[in-house]
Length: 148
Image (cartoon, rainbow, N blue to C red):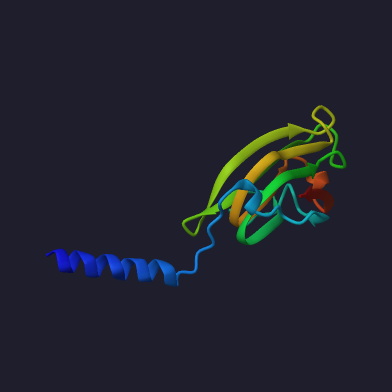
């Protein structure tokens, strides 16, 4: 019995070594994501986002190795004054996209730039930002974003 357990342990160790996993020791070992600024035009009120919800995909950040996202800002100030803007974030959990952030903001009342992530968030996989407006006038409008 002891021999079988020893053989299984050796097999398990060899399998783990063959996975070539990256092991990080400290926060400083994990890189920060590269800074990106851009904008997306979509039908924010009448479109359909990847999740199937009303709105559109603002950006999908595809990450192949663990990185920290320290800041993600969505600029809603150029949309229709008084519009309710819903920002949703999704990330992959075991291969399935899961919603983990869903907040409403009002253009003209809330800040023009919404800091959706303002602190360190470790991400590995896909991080998708979806936006929805309740105003048809926002269809075809460009929404800017920045992450770093």
